[in-house]
Length: 488
Ligand code: NAP
Image (tube, rainbow, N blue to C red):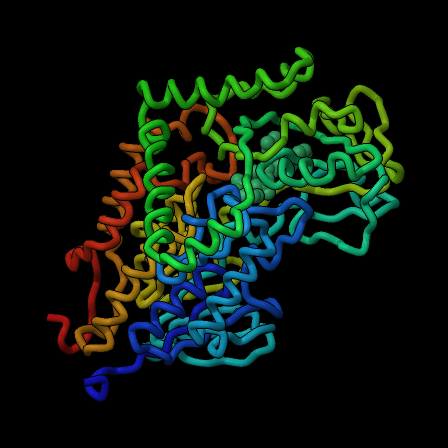
């Protein structure tokens, strides 16, 4: 049977969670003609790159894992980053995906040539592919703050995603700029280790402080013995997390209840001055909610100081705030986030009619149902614009996106088409629906965050995860320009 099938040449850019996901599903479908280009020396993407102290996934591991490769041995409800990275690497090895990964292979450009894509690496090497899939992740380009004097700091300073593990931390005076999900995890780890931890907060975030229990040996043994338990807990956590969708997506009692639950967390902070400093002026969940094992406990310690006064400049000895106070630091950590709107860039891409990705996205990043671009045939994206990211399992999202890609790749294999790209009209129609639904969401209630693009539009999916899965499971041929002898 397979003799009659064409073997597509597929380039996947990135060997993180999404790239490994697609690789595993391709192999499962009998397609081994793919190469994963990874710019780093190892697989794992964000979980390989981010090694800051306290890193963990704030989505429960029993749901933050592949549905086709469940791990009975998670050590905690929310696993540490290194454990997730080991899991991803293990899946890549167990499935055989690792043999398709080329490390130290940075893709520089992707250009449509003679009926296929030409992928050029940074060292000049070129190869041709029938499909290209971007699996570069959404948060991979560190955002360095535009703070005067940053380069004058005389002691070690680094971004959270470029942690320098040679720098000793215990007993030192550590300055931390940024209080998002990353900053909060770092605070929880460094509080008590650092001699003094000074947290520079520009905007307070809403925090849900919860426990992170270890799984007992008995629980792990049970999961190994009865794999059905893995399926049960996977879907249990999925349903639990999805039960918050109504609060996110429309005003009403669910949002008011969730908002009340989150607001009351602040009561743990006893000092009214500190509590006021930590109180955001926007709706809970408008920005990504911080799920933390102990942020409010940590910032109430005597050796942890929250500085809510704006930073004026960085000086050789520390950080000076606009009230004139110099906060001396031995180490300065920048937990200042990522450029969440880069997507696959800085990779340059040019489609068949000479349009570049930069030109196509001149008014802001857009993608048909988050995964494909008009004018760029046989090209798909993981975690593209308007993917349902947020406090949800990106692995579950990647699986839904991979399923859609596999449908098109399967049709190509059977000779039903040569190229496929969404129409501009279908993409416009999708954005019409997005624009109509977005104002009801909590993300549009008035706050700045990485969810919001340069044009002021929220780049999330304004419907529930179930809607996303159904939308990608349904292939509407009329939404696509399809070429090829048998495409009709
Ligand atoms: P972030 O949420 O974008 O937070 C960046 C922080 O840096 C904010 O507090 C921001 O202040 C501050 N900042 C930026 N520029 C600044 C400047 N010039 N001066 C002072 N402060 C400045 O970034 P992140 O914490 O790295 O998190 C990004 C995303 O990564 C999260 O939302 C989440 O999706 C993902 N993440 C997930 C997990 C997980 O457990 N699943 C863990 C970590 C991260 P403003 O708020 O005022 O802008």
